[in-house]
Amino acid sequence: MGEKYFMENEKIYGMDFSKVYGLLVQKAEKKGRSKEEVDEIIRWLTGYSQEALEEMLEKIVHYGDFFRDAPELNENRKLIKGVVCGVRVETIQDPLMQEIRYLDKLVDELARGKAMDKILRKQLTGEQA
Image 1: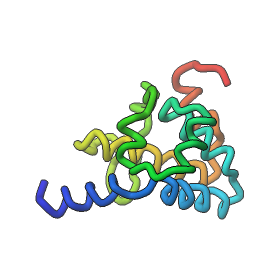
Image 2 (image 1 turned 180 degrees about the vertical axis):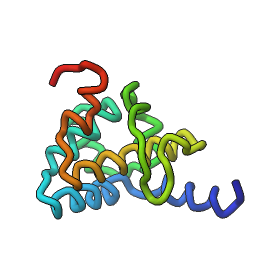
Image 3 (image 1 turned 60 degrees about the vertical axis):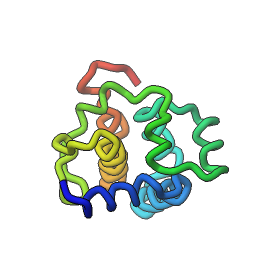
């Protein structure tokens, strides 16, 4: 991994979470999905409550810190497979970048019309909605 890779990751980690969140919601809404569904995905992935998520959106929080400070990353996130931004999420070596790409992948699935139960990997774990 070269210096360019490191610099690109640091740029992503330093982005304002509220701006990234706005882009994720916009992507979902363009495909007929909702902000509430994006929030559900984020809560599932990170363990943040809706109240905590909304508080994060009202202040400047770096995207990397949003994941570093997540209350409880969902253990089932390791079931997320596939390609996002041209890279297989399950093979990403940088743990923080992998968390970020998991969220990207889940919102991609939402925008493609996948059912929430499948996005949240409920059928794979036997978890009930």
